[in-house]
Image 1 (cartoon, rainbow, N blue to C red):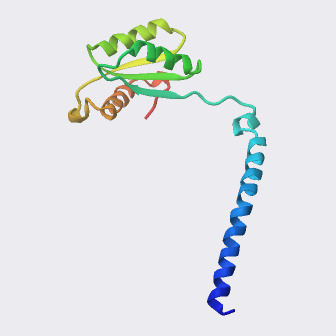
Image 2 (spheres, rainbow, N blue to C red):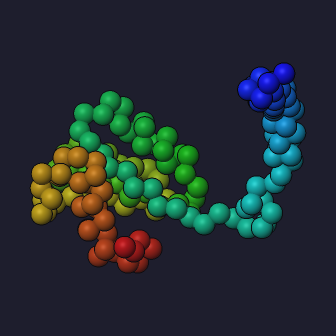
Length: 144
């Protein structure tokens, strides 16, 4: 047997051995991972509240139902920040959402034309405008 044949046989043996052993290693890893407890369960404390930033665009079918489902999925101490264009249906939907869920922290921010007026109609532009407007509301717990 010459050297190239020996190297090829060794490489093929190593490849097929690893292929045969890998499923068992993966199964063992999966079992160990499933037995682990999540980090927040180990600490015994609640997760901190979050702020959901949601730009609203025109023409979304069943917008009120979708927003109600979003609020229903939130925890009680989470905050919802809605960025809307002023004077449109989305602003009235946000106001109705605030009235329907008074115990929730829901803030409707009207986006104004800014330096980024070309981005105003994009979701990123609405979020940026909402961030600019929210800097005036530090009592809401939102800070840049």
